[in-house]
Length: 318
Image (cartoon, helix red, strand yellow):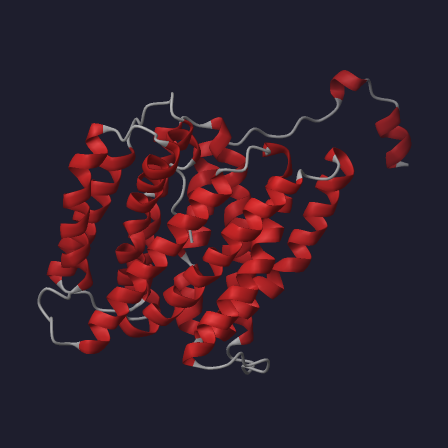
């Protein structure tokens, strides 16, 4: 009966999708990716296990989306697949190092420390692409490292080996993630974004599991307490968050998108305090604030004439 009624209506009466402010979508996606560190902490598994499940559980969803993309747009260029495959290797290293860092210094602080990736991307663009580095970026970098030093807690506890190791792993994670963003960003094929994410997720699962095995092999039976958090890590952080952000960012000026993504480390710190009962010191909170200000200064209103400024300004998202 409902089919007959619908067919009797004119095309002008067809329902239209309700428009959603892209800023709302970016914030929703940012909230999703802010939870990844929390899910890793709640799962309480080895880095290899967290990385393996994060990628494997996400693959079926990404495969369905990629298949639809392939049907509509055909096969992606071989160069596009190669760029995402190489980038995914570095992404896996990022996953493994970050997971171990979380176990040592907490989800919130490790996320803030690995914000060093905002330095890696433009430096690579300058070294390889000969892109001009904006003046505000050069001025913001020293401030960023001061903030990272304060946020890490290593300044007040230089002899805490676990703390120093955790900070080092977070920095390594940020460098690896920056290389991933730069490599994937070199892909000029914007018509197969989901396929690219699928490819990078496959290679990330391989490299991340291998690197993460330094701290223990992959546990295929992590226990029922860990499984729900690992599924949430994959579906919410790996798929949903980036789908929302990837859909909305092209509709926003690059400086607006980059500024909105600054909410992510702030949310992760707050969620770490509320859910994981992490207890950053006042000095660490000050450091986190300095980092956010420095990132804003480094990414705000980058010149649009350089492709890396617009394509890579959205790098930080877990």
